Length: 92
Image (cartoon, rainbow, N blue to C red; front, side, top):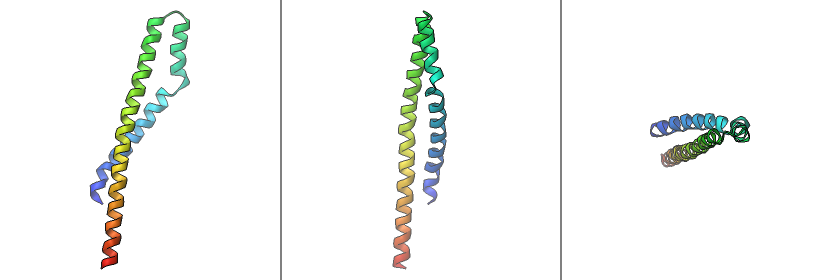
């Protein structure tokens, strides 16, 4: 049981980080800034803003991958622990 605690803690941290990143990069305002910059004729600024949005979404994908790995690891560890505990209680 104790061996899954680090995976659970990493999963909680990564889930919180993922939520914060999604809250920022999925706002309409961040997309609107790039559109307004392009409409105003500042294509260099619009390109920079769109690049930041793209980069942010790539970071979100990486964090999602690591987070799902930690959560699956913790879940499988808890499952194995509960099955072993059940078998031990049944045998004894």
